[in-house]
Amino acid sequence: MVICTGCGREFESATDTENLCPQCQAEILSTLPPDPEPGRLRRLLESPTIVLIALNTLVYLVMATESRNFTFTPQVLESWGANSGALTCSGQWWRLFTSTFEHGFLLHIALNMWALYNLGWLAELLFGRTRFTLMYLLCGIGGSLGSICWHGNGVSVGASGAIFGIAGALIPAMLLHGNQQLRKVLRGQLVSITIFVLYSLVSGARSSGIDNAAHIGGLVTGLILGALFPTGPDREEHRGRLRVAAGTGLMLLVFTGAGAFARQRNEPYVEEELALSAHGRGDISAAIVHARRAVQLNPQNAHAQFMLGTMLLDTQQYGDAVQPFTTTARLRPKFGPAFVNLCVAQRELKMLPEALSNCEHGAELAPGDSESWFNLGRVRYDLRDLTGARDALAKAAALNPQGFDENLQYALMLIANNQLPDAIPYLRKAHNLRPQDDSLTRLLLRAERQ
Image (cartoon, rainbow, N blue to C red; front, side, top):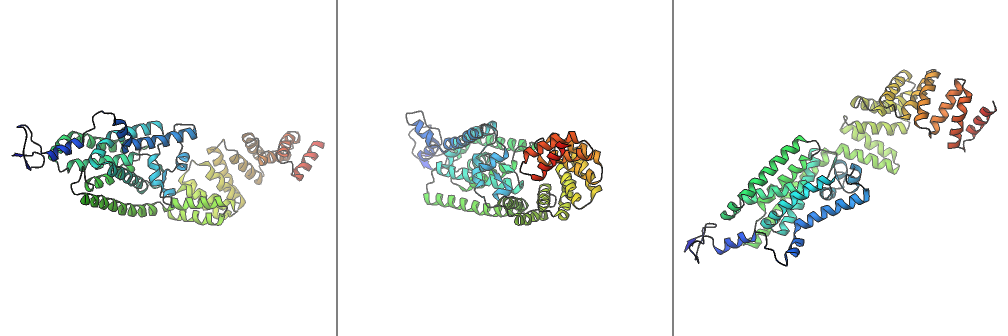
């Protein structure tokens, strides 16, 4: 009788050099890649790793074909199901899943699929195809939740959370495997995977373009599942199923708690999204209510402040609009439209000196924006600075030659400065843009007769 070096049981050896029992030999052989044979292509196509790589690649190619580009904007990614604190937490929880099959550019998907190919085959052999697939999907969701729990709002895509999860699952699986001989065989793989994880996390921490929160979320999910899910053929099938069910149930409970935390963390952005949605439906009152709520939850959110101010300005609530525009200008001192809109509100409130200062500053910050010069011209006119008003409106008309208001107001200002011949071309252009305006038609006729 010989003592098995793998499990310690006694068995009858056919040779003097044999030191593994038949059961341990079978386990080791089951983890090795199959020898080339006619059925290899079929097994390759049945591999979850290959199927997942194919699905990710297919999604990328379809997106590239539709957008006619290999690099996608945040708007394109969102339309295809990207993960976002505002959208996901507003009830679109399916984005936690769909975002794991999207990638932003060619190198992004190439690196992720290379990592998945190298890690996936080993995870398949250790956990089995079904458990590996379930683990991959859970780790992807765990990574998506990690992203919106940590970063809040923003766009996040990619399979890296799921891939880090698979790497994380392999670590306890190899460390805790019951077959001592197999642990020795996999020791080199364990070291390589650990180095890969640590190096990638350090690199991600140094780069603003890498979503390390998704990596950590997937990694933690994988570490837990790797410790709970059985590896190899479990001799007690019922016990193996219970371990898979327990691990899955535990992660679903964790996901529920993480989702609740993410919903609370992203509530200001959710309110922003609800405001935009209500505004798109034409329900301005509801849009303002949600915008106010977004500002109340996060007063330092310049985007929400500007959105609220713009909605109040559009509904002629000029007094209420001053504060959000003032806050936006303080939070984003280089954002010209905040100063211009503040100027518009102050002009309507007859706060002309303050309006002039803000319009001039807005025009300096956004010299290519016709609206900045147009409103500056109106404020100067109110202050009886006809020459300054004419010059500002001249720039507005030059920047927006097809703008009705710009052409008409510039023409009127030329007339006020006794430059009637110069005003006629701009009156004609305004008339061509709005020929149904009877008062403008009469004004043009009178100007042409003089």
